[in-house]
Amino acid sequence: MLHLQSSSSDRWLQQVDAGLDEILIDHAHCEKKAAGCAMNLIFAYVEQEELCREMVLIVNEELDHFQQVLDLLARRGTRFRRQTPSTYGRRLNDLVRKFEPDKAVDRLLVASLIEARSCERFDLLRRHVADQELADFYGSLFESEARHHTTYVRLARLFAPEEKVMQRLDELAVLEAAIIDEGDAFPRMHS
Image (cartoon, rainbow, N blue to C red; front, side, top):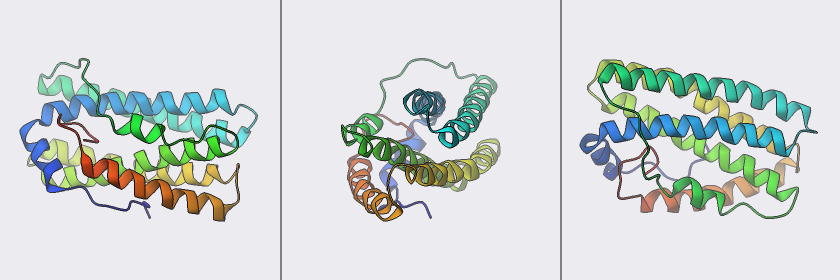
């Protein structure tokens, strides 16, 4: 369903245990970036009304999630602040082809893979953390991330035939797996 080619490693769960507050702060940044990505797609493909309407829904949902994470941080006494981001998103976006319509397909599929990885990680967090509030919170986000993943894949079909979209998704998923397997030194949602 999620088109991921690998599962998150125990290394990441060790980072969660050692730096949960850093993961939570990064999660807030990820929700903000996800809303920005959806807004950028509206600007880039304004002639695609279906895409624009779907992106409005995603922008609103991502901003709601951002607010929820900010509220969660406040309840935990953790200050939201800047962080050094992981290289995950940048490295995935570096894979986007330069010319349309391939560029649109790749932008949407990269967004879909980020949502899929977030979904997988939210499920891991839900099952891993002892804090019931956090477990419930991550359980509540799981479904929307999976839905966003599917939406982005479906919208990529506005720019290319399904066979080409799925072939490219498979290619990008292999590359995403290599990136996530390398990881990052800092505890982040996608480290």
